[in-house]
Picture 1: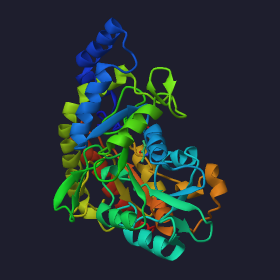
Picture 2: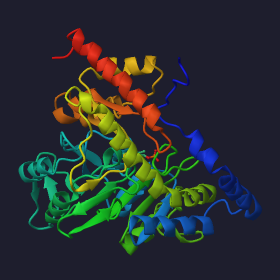
Picture 3: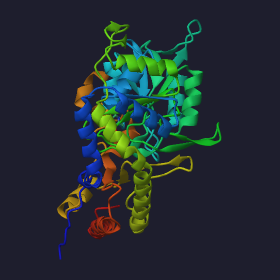
Picture 4: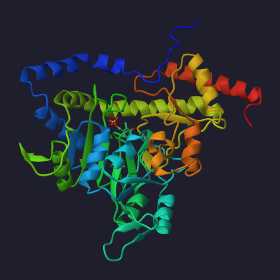
Length: 405
Ligand SMILES: *Cc1c(COP(=O)(O)O)cnc(C)c1O
């Protein structure tokens, strides 16, 4: 009866077995040249990924966190500055802000898209900030901090609603850095330009992560900054390499945040597969929608607005009895995830920010209800049916004993 009932949340073994020969060849090549840092493999990947993102430049770095941090520093963000972002994100978004010397200022998310609520951003800027008539800088009235940048997070593989964010950013002179760490290949329809745009090409700069579990993942740590601004690209290039323009000529305080050649080679080998993998994820999402239709009143399915083409880094549903549902699935051998159980403003590490429960009610409610179902290009329809069957059963049980209102 129980034939292979284990359905993992994520399968990172199969895709690497499928590409094993190619990946091993990259390692061999690198051993032959000993070009472990920099060199043609890094440059080739940077060129190809810039092309994929439809941006002028891509600078490979050591992680998504460093991509965010170096983008902020290159943009001139520093001590005394305030950077706007959302509470429902991976903690790296705010770590990068504090590592740049700035402080995060939170604006809540939209309840349907789970990304930065442009209306609340407008309200924040109009009611809590003012533009200094002399300098043109946006100042937060109470703290007198200079508000210099905004980081919209393209969460779960879907872009934030960028047009109104860009409009506000222009009015308030904010640098826009997309956190595209979960959105390789996601698209946004810009009404102002009347065309689809790739995640990473919409703001002034964008940060990507190639952590193994991302839609495009390395076999280790890696990240990238994309931009259309040549000057900013040059700055990030210097920052990642000890602030040097030429070897041992250091123009600024820099970091060691380079992209390994082996990782770049691996990413370059995987990149041609990414459009197919993303397409598979979109099909997988559609299957889930069909399979879960009978319980769409009991659980909330992801909302994909007409202006977004998600690449479903995660397939996230919402359930009021999320923890019980998760336990039920787990006991049936089905792996799930929670992204994220504690919003960033309530993390112990961020006590200093001075927030309390209730400050960002949408993020808090969503965090208490989200459940990420198994999602990867190799996930089979049969496995999905089994996930759905267990969920239907659980919801039926829950309503029969009156746990649900
Ligand atoms: C993964 C991720 C990061 C950090 O990337 P790393 O490569 O792990 O440093 C930042 N922001 C978001 C939204 C992420 O999902």
